Image (cartoon, rainbow, N blue to C red):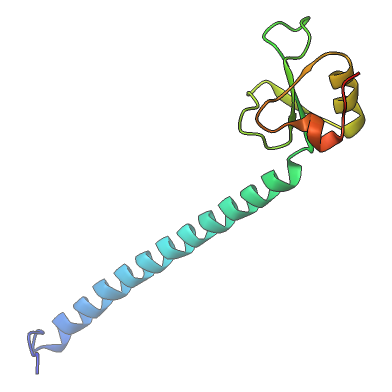
Length: 114
């Protein structure tokens, strides 16, 4: 068959050692990548668990009224959003804060104006 390996024992042992070192490096890299994937999965799962049911998007000015109420996880909610409970979301809607037109938290909450 293929006999392209060196004919002497010394060089074969060197090749075996060299390849064993490479296999060990590859195995270590595989283990690191698997751990990174597992960590990303744990982080993603934790983020899903931490997603609040309702979001309150606040304005640029700390003293200004909030901008909108969103359903938790709404893609339109800005970075300046914080989680609120159901009662808080209802109070803000009743206080005149706009409901997001995309996720419609007013519908989800069963809030009817007036």
